[in-house]
Image (cartoon, rainbow, N blue to C red; front, side):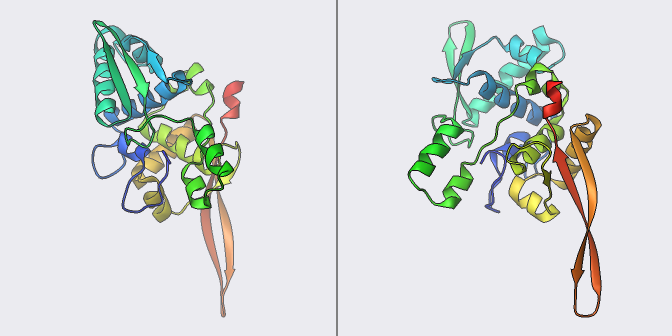
Length: 239
């Protein structure tokens, strides 16, 4: 999956896009890679999954400063980097804006296949559950772009939005929990990134968090543990 990978020896594409190092972070280069790739998926939604837009259009969509000059250069550089990472393919057009073809979100350079189509194909062919799990998908609302939210979220905020949406399986207001160890292994994001991302989502009113008490009865004593749970609600963006 793009967001999560239960193989402890590898990081999922989300974490790899955010960081060029060993730890999933949210620097400016990483957050632009993530925002631009997600935006390409949003726009190039139908076969042949190619889009032609001037770089300044992407810079404007993502709220970059100095859209006509520096913002445009940043987008152009990021497109080249995404191509080097096998997330997209660029088609030069002789001085005109390049054609951008979205490739597999696994970063393996393979042809892009719509998640719903792939999942339904595998299920029809009665593939094992672990294969289906790898291709489980969720949808992001168009309001992430049309309200300008994607321009205001930083790297950690956008990453945790994707993580929570993944764990909720796309259902708003579902409470989710994951231990720090599982979060690090499954999502490849550092604790500081997760904390900063959740904090920004709470500031925007997109996430509510609560602490619940869990009771475990032992032979001689009852143990009370506390667990932090989170709920993401993107439906309010429709208002």
